[in-house]
Length: 250
Length: 250
DNA sequence: TGCTATTTGTACGTATGTATC
DNA sequence: CGATACATACGTACAAATAGC
Image (cartoon, rainbow over all chains, first blue to last red):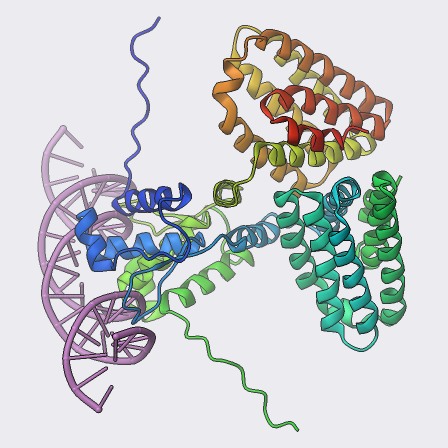
C-alpha cells in the first residue's frame, strides 16, 4: 500500500492559461466592470504568447460574457458588468440538446416562482408591494391592446416578486427560463383564440397573489402563483405532462 | 406614416457565423455526439475563412461544451454528448461575480430538492425507490470512515430522487448548485467537530424522506427534505440568512 | 518498434476597416 | 480632415501530437 498518489497529467493549452488568469482577475474583483484589458499586442507581451493565442483566449472570455472587444477601440477589451447572458445561453442550449419539454420548463417556473412568492410574502417591503401593484396596473392597461407591453409588465411583476424574495439565484433563473418558454411558444400564445380571456384571468390571478403577499400568507400566495402559471400555460402542454404539473397544485 | 421599418445593422464577425452554423447543426441533431467535424483546413475551405477564424469559432464551441479538439487527431473536432458542464461553469461564474451568498445557494437547493422529492413521491417506481435505499445504505456504510464515499452516496441519493421526479432541468440544476455549495464549504464540512453526528442525522433524515416517498406523501416528503438540508447546512450560514431559510420550513 | 502523413497548437507578418483624438 | 492605435481577418511557417502502417 501507499507510495505517492500520482495524478494524470493534463496538458493545458496556452490560451487556457491566459483565460484562467484574466478570469481570476475579473471574478476576484481585481478588474472591475468598465475597466479595460490591455490591448491584444500588450497582452501578447505580458503573457509571452502570440497574437492568435491572445485572441482565442479573448473569444472564450467573450463567450462567457466577461469581456467585449470592438474593432477600432483605442483601449483594449472592456470588462463587462455581470449579466446572466452566459447562463441564458447555456440553458437554451441545454433545453435543445437535452430535449427539455415545455412541461419541464413550465414546471421549473412553477417551482421557482412559487418559492419566490412564498419568500416575498415574508420579506417584501411596502415599496416592493407598490411595484407589484404598478406592474399589474400596467398589465391591465395593456390588456387586449398592446401584446408587447402586457408581456413586459408581466416580466416586471415577476421580477419585483423575485427581488422581494431576496434570492438573486431564483430571480435570475426564473427570468432565464421564462424567456426560453416565451420564445418557445410566443407564436402560439399570440394566436390563442381566447387570448383576451387568458389575459384577464391572468391579471385577476396576479391580483390575488399580491393580496396574499400583502397579507403575509406565503403558502397561499405560492399556491395561487402556481395555479396562475398552470392556467396560463397548461393549454400548450400535452396531457401526460399536464398531470405532472398538477402535482404541484395541491 | 409607414415606409419600410429599417432595423439597425449589427456587424457580425466571421467567426460568429461559423459558430452559428455549427451550433445549429449540432443542436438540430444533424451532427450527433461522437461524430467528427471536418478538419480545420477543411472547414476553412467550406466556410471560406482563414484558419484563425475557424479556430476562434472552435474555441467558442468548445467553451460551450459542444465540441472538443485534440492536437494531432486525424479526424476533426469531436461532437460531444450533452453535458451540463457549460451550465456549471456559467453558474459558478455567476455565483462569484453576482456575489451569491451561501444562504442563497442553499435556499435554492431547498426549493428544487423539495420539489423533486414532491414529484418523486408521485412518480417513483419501485426500482427507483430501491436505488434511493441503496444510496442511503452506502451512506451508512461510509459514515465515519470514508468521507468521499459518503458524499458520493449522498449525490447518488439526490440524483435518484431527481430522476424519479421526472424533471431533467430540476435534476441538472440541483446537481450543479450542489457541487458549487460543496466546493464552497468542503473544508469547513470536513473540519466540523460534530461531523460524525451530522452524518448520522443526515442518514436518518434521508430514511424519513424515503419513507414519505414510499407512502406517496409528497408534501411531507418535501418538508422533511427541506428540513434535512437546513439542518445540514444551517451551521455554515449566517443568522440573518438562516431566518430566510426557515421561511421554507413551514 | 520506428516511420510517415496528417492534424492541431502556436508564432509571426501583413492588410484592412474602424474608433478616437 | 489626418494621425494614431486598435481589432479583424488572412496567410505562412514550424513545432508537437496522433493515428496508421
